[in-house]
Length: 278
Image (cartoon, rainbow, N blue to C red; front, side, top):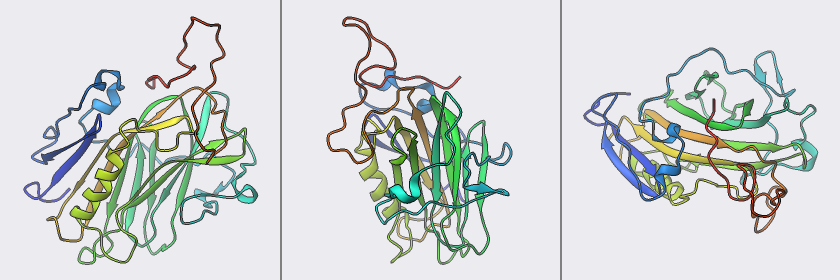
């Protein structure tokens, strides 16, 4: 990821923002405040997600011939009832997610560990999407951007959305955008956005959905005020088994209504609990 003497990694754990020099593959450390013992091991894994593992398969009817047609969304990432519905649901035991890149000609890679890698490259100014079906559990994801023009820099942007088969709409599970396109992304601007995201300590960016984004970390290859040419964002998408009972954007979502008799508990009831991927 470039000159390690200039590379700095930022890691968010337990609501704390930690900073480490990229001196080597084991240089990144982990830590956090109380509650880290409840985190899945994937969140505490300091290693880089290795790109590759084959092409990330598209699991929606929106995907044909290796390309997926992105659904229409507004500036806030919201879709509409007319365009959100999937023509076929995911298989039992799986949930569907949309991973959407930024715009521009930069090369962008999205890797889901153990599943595969999706690549956006070449002169394709529009955003690109991949739709994947994943089982409940903690899945490590890497978003890697290489600037088409190193002098101009890159514009990292990633959105993750979860599909609701019940409501035929999408939950806005996560969004990272370094800049609004009016200026190049620098390490300082990326850190500002990262600090904002890190304040969401529980990782549930959309309280109506059933997924958390945890273990955020990013690294760049440039000095603080220079446009980044190589950018890496890693996260853990922690997917829970329960079916959300609220539609996207419902005010004051509170999670799953308990269905077990009083005095019993289950990983599918009440407060979300960790269910690492097998």
